[in-house]
Length: 157
Length: 132
Image 1 (spheres, each protein chain N blue to C red):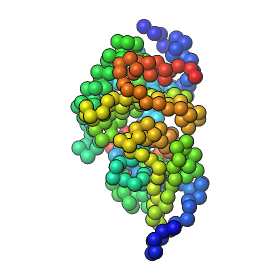
Image 2 (cartoon, helix red, strand yellow; image 1 turned 180 degrees about the vertical axis):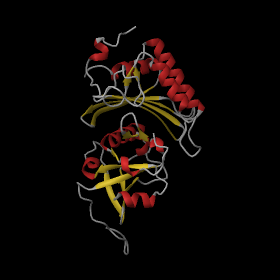
Image 3 (cartoon, rainbow over the protein chains, first blue to last red; image 1 turned 90 degrees about the vertical axis):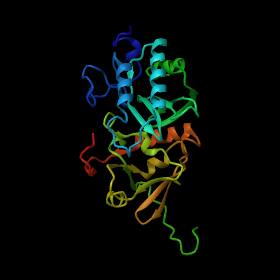
């Protein structure tokens, strides 16, 4: 298990000044940009996915069951490849798709799980200089590529 | 140039503010204090992202809005992807140059995330009480 005070966790990103965001435990450091580091990141992320659409009105965007199950499978299998320590900054639905964002001040990752099998799941990565993206790329999502991306987002530039 | 009879508006000043309405309370991300990127995903039925030129005009056009955020025209134009803010009514404009996610997923995400970063949430402009 990787300790929260390890170099991987501490290098190259910034903590929000308040250290606590939106109902998170105050002992879990929040990365400026919205993502949070915690030892139970996977279960918290899956809980957020399951809650999406559960309490919202029918007029709101909700992800399809396929999108949610695909996201949960990718995350669970990525965890087997490498432990996940980062909790998303945003979990959102758009036209049945599910998009999970992990944002820091210098690197961002988005997992895009489409509403149906007509398109493959993808991973978007970008590198920031201030508020502008100076590099971005898309790759097909797999447990390995997701594990790589979530390790990459926490790495120093 | 517009067609005869069509009103052509002057280019908006770089320091002008524009306002994007939240269709739902969950358009705002309480974790980041910013709107969610999905607020800036263009639908295929739209020619651009609808923005109001004043908070009052935005609420008048979208009376069911759960809130809104403010963007500065200069910051929109500073996007690495070419965007334009085109006024098309006395109190309304569109952000043009945004592809749909179906057309170009990578560019659509890059733009939406950029616009989300430069947007300022307007906390005093909510009408619904179920906002997070």
